[in-house]
Length: 478
Ligand SMILES: Nc1nc2c(ncn2[C@@H]2O[C@H](COP(=O)(O)OP(=O)(O)OP(=O)(O)O)[C@@H](O)[C@H]2O)c(=O)[nH]1
Ligand SMILES: [Mg+2]
Image 1 (cartoon, protein in one colour):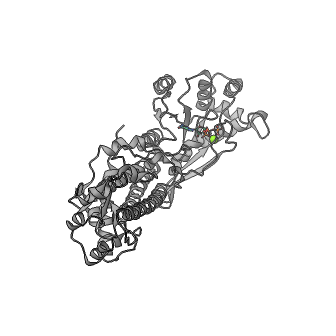
Image 2 (cartoon, helix red, strand yellow; image 1 turned 90 degrees about the vertical axis):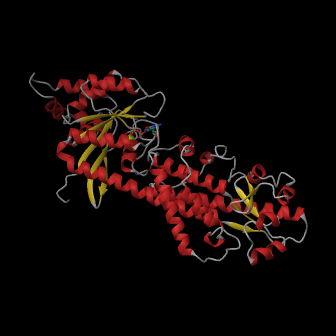
Image 3 (cartoon, helix red, strand yellow; image 1 turned 180 degrees about the horizontal axis):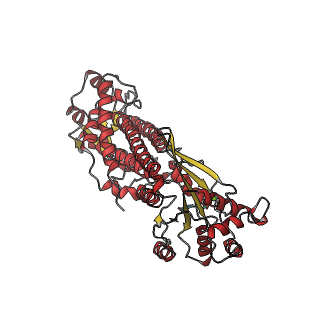
């Protein structure tokens, strides 16, 4: 593959149209260049490479914005000495004028035009929230003088005010029919694919590098999702198996309730920390740092069962126990969850306080002893595991849809409806039920629990990972 010529792509356009942001997203690099809401940020031409399998398949050039396009266009026309001259000849003359060399007032624009003139293809970044204006036409005229193929790139298209149709129309009137909607912030792999295919049509001599670029993106996408599914599966086994046993309580109901409350808080705390670790791991799989998602915007509290694992009042809201009369309900076997022989408290399962409830699952010697001592166990129930599973998958999908140029805190709200519409994979439900009988499978359990059957833990993680991978792979609608 050493004879492969990387395609050279120059991202050009007016100041502040999101050129550097487009590069960040195409390169999957948050650390490329400087992005700012003020125009004139990028002052030099800078290249970012895209590699696959040790080969550079594309080199993308970030360029300073074309600020004074009317002046450029006038100067370009002034260079004409003969009717028959093509515009590239005029441009070459323009670029050696004093205004266009170091220290000249058009120095930055000239550097962008030089880079454009050497590129295989230009991406003309447009802020689609604006209407097409004369200055855009001036820019297109000047860029046409480079004689390079040009693809209009509609950035900011995910914004409601984007004037996508007006822009497509305006570009078509200039003979530019390959306009691509590509939002630097809300990533959509279909737009990226359309962009690459447009390049292939316009630059057939770089077909092999573009094909490698496409293959590389697909392979990286699969690997990222697989790695994220593994992280999610490991977390779900930890969460499902997590079991907290309360300290021995000699007293009556009040003491037991207090011990249970404190164990619940402890469990929630552990789950919360571990979930945030999982999120950081998933973020890393997609080339993010993880701090994009620390905010509470990741909650989908009311969407499923109303159990909020990160709210201080989680058990209060979910727990009949804490609401008063819980012990009585438990003792009466109300709300008994036959599947686990416990009692559902929203997303949680409490075992041990009520002999009747525990009895259904059968108590081991250790458990029997704890019961006699008034000890109780708390862990997640089916609903709780399912909620965490959906939230983890939603997190994966939200990262998949996040452009590397995004600066707003990550939200998963818009993928939640989609996730809720998908059936919970039965493999996850089954494997997590198995995990729930094995406190030793979770590093969150207290006491740690016997770590027997770790090979089977590995099997359970693998089965869950396969299922999660399948759910996340299903294309998101819209
Ligand atoms: N919502 C939204 N914001 C964007 C998008 N692209 C860029 N931005 C924001 O727009 C501003 C300008 O982005 P830059 O990438 O710095 O623009 P630029 O064209 O490189 O700017 P100059 O280098 O100054 O010419 C920044 O605040 C970006 O966060 C987008 O697709 N959607
Ligand atoms: Mg820039």
